[in-house]
Amino acid sequence: MNKPWLKPIFFDTLRADLFPLKTHEEGVVRMYHCGPTLYSCPTIGNWRSFLFSDVLRRTLEWGGWKVFQAMNITDVGHMRESDDSSLKIDPIQEKAKEKGLSPWDIVARYEKQFFSDMDSLNMKKPTHMSKATKHIDDMVSMIRELVDKGYAYESNGNIYFSVKSFKKYGNLSKNLIEKLDLGHRIDINSEKRDARDFALWKTDPKHLMKWDTELGCDGFPGWHIECSAMVNSLFGDKLDIHSGGEDLVFPHHECEIAQSEAFSGKKLAGHWMHCRFLLVDGGKMGKSLGNAYTPSDIYNRGFNGSELRYSLIRGHYRQPLNFSFELLKDSRSALKRLHNFVQDLDDVKEANSHNHDFVQKYKDSFVDFMQKDLDVPQAIAVVMDLVKDSRKKGLDDIAVSAKSFLSEVNEVLGIFVKQDSSDNQKIKEMIEERNKARDDKDWKKADCIRDELLGLGIQIKDSSSGTTWNKIK
RNA sequence: GGGCGCGUGGCCAAGUGGUUUAAGGCGUGGGCCUGCAAAGCCUAUAUUCGUCGGUUCGAAUCCGACCGCGCCCUCCA
Picture 1 (cartoon, rainbow, N blue to C red):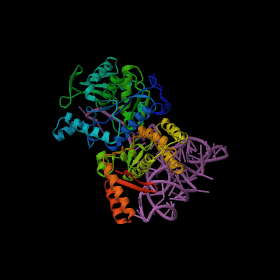
Picture 2: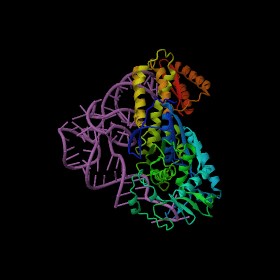
Picture 3: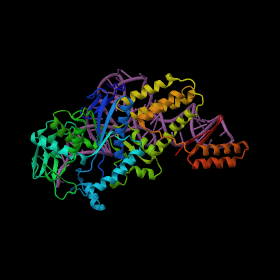
Picture 4: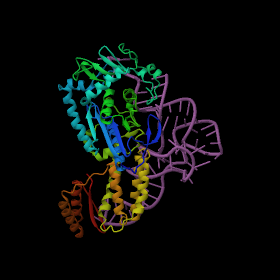
């Protein structure tokens, strides 16, 4: 049996308070995070939520938990409003028509980009990733049973979940079911028994992605059922943490709870965690506003994945985070400071004594902050304190233990870039040449070499004990 | 119209009743170091937490109103 040392306390959206993490199996966490719908490149806002899941997973693994992290890729059924709000469209299908490709090609194309972005952001690949269309059978059998149990009904070829049949509907989002129909949008779909019922299965011969199943011909699933089916097929009724962006609380997660719990009679998830939105320049991010950046957009402006990652995880996940290019520059400087520190630790020649006590207190507070609802900003502050205080104290005594602490920090936050040592020899030679020039007081030549190195992304520092360098790109 | 949440220095961002007369990062001013830089160090930088009231011995932290911002109010609207 696994005995994790980290005892996390997380905020649970459903119970609206902090609770110690309790899982179905001691030392094992099964978590599911709602992934992207791949009709375009996920924006940095989407990435904030994916990286939240990544930090959560890394934290738990670091803390000794065995983690199963699942993430779906939606490739069917996620309908959204058209740009003029006049009708519901399937964005993947629209994109396919626009590009003259099949929906499968569209998904494959964006999937490739998605994984490449995941890599550039140093996000660990979830242990389980799957596309909705791989689980059609699971969805069909779940829907069948919901109909049999009386929670769902068929109408005109479509199958809807009857919201009134599930008493707890609205608990997660705190929406009062009686008030839902008082909103601006009033559903006048007459084939539904209740305007608030949601679709589990649709029939449409014109839909490009469709299946012949025991539910009928030319059908495709509703959006919410995919997550319920995937969770059920992967974890049965043992899901511990279900997470996603705050926009998914309602209707998506509310509907998942209804379906899954009506189906199994058990709680869908022990903890519900939602991360807040990413704002841009203090306001909403949106495609029509021209500020819905993708990672590529950021990289094209000269920033790297590490800088973007740091920017997206540095705020508390339950607090809106304000993104801007200013923030990226800020992150770049902070990261540089951290890199310089790590470099200086590496440069300590004879790190003979291991002063663990000094580092231990920083580690303890780092643990406390991560443990208490993933307080990344506080945890980062602790690391910065360590940097500052170590500098004052002198690096010799603490180098070994500080290095090991920082590598743990990196396990959790994933913010340090690995240094590539391929052309060290050439750099060494250039530095030697420059030092010769300095001895000859040939400042012009020395500065020229320094600029050349800088052009290669090498920053050098002179000190009484010699010249050291590190990569800044 | 309804539900949920937020508003802290030039910027980002912790803190949610008394060890905080508000962490940490970035930026900026001054100093040290340096051939000059870079890096690093020292130092300065919110009597104040959207606004106005209230509760309390005591509030950024609780309550009310107002202002501003964000998410949601469902599938062929």
